[in-house]
Image (tube, rainbow, N blue to C red; front, side, top):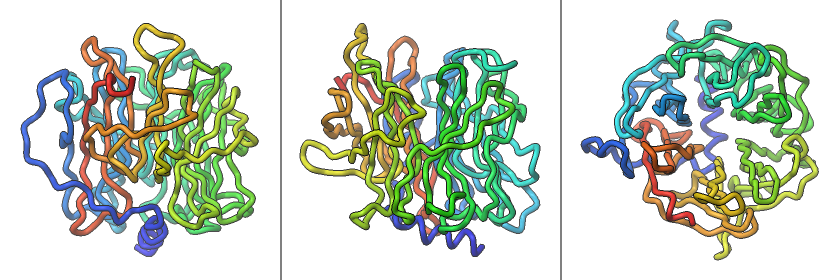
Length: 391
């Protein structure tokens, strides 16, 4: 358990002692509606680590939603391996059923941390447009002995999964201790015929952590990694990269957390804009600060919302773990305001714009916070918000 404890103590820097919401006993909302605070999955009380965290959702071709998260039902001494559970909703996220699970078929370690899902927009290699992807961290329960970011694919909307490739490798241990060769937090983007995976990277001895990317033209072999954000301060820890495209200005926006900043406290939300999503390294580094002077922190996740019927107007919507409110910019990330959507926050709370039976809405998914254990109880919950509040 020493690795778990090391990870827990260091992650506490990022506001991890926050209590998760009390469990709500309630019936499911009406299908295809807006709703808040909807419990989806309760992990076992005796589950190790923080029981659950880091939820992700996606809408597949038949209109259903899929949901996954970090799930840790087994202790370090168990011979069972963790998987990414996949749940399915056919009523706009109001109720869920088991669909499948993504199991580690290569390393005998399990699928442990930070799943990310994506649907190919174009053919890549032998994989057709519409193929569903999931990538996540595979590492031993002890967190020692190596770590892969592994890629699995599904050609049947998540009913079954097949290993495609090792995206990146680190020697471990998989902790946030400086010097440990850990990798974290994959995020997908297609660009110019390639699939890019951005990830947090501790393998470079010149950096406690930096943001890196690797890319592929066939989902089978991957390029050498290159820097996305790397600060000169060896103690700096940029992490949790998310990319969105702002068509109004023809720019890609990288949002990320900047832990161990010059101010010495927290993990403030930062972002960069670039016309090429592989060239953020020298782009201006901007701190997200609202018009009232507030800077949120921790695991920002951003999406672009294009206003209905418009190709010239829209909003960046961004979530952080420090606030239940969302942060919104209607002027291409120049200024930011806060919008109360009355939804749970969480570690890397996920945002998904989706077609809710003919109405575009925003789906939010959370599974609590890293560092929540013991009497603090993480569970998976979701909500759906009308988009009119962001116009």
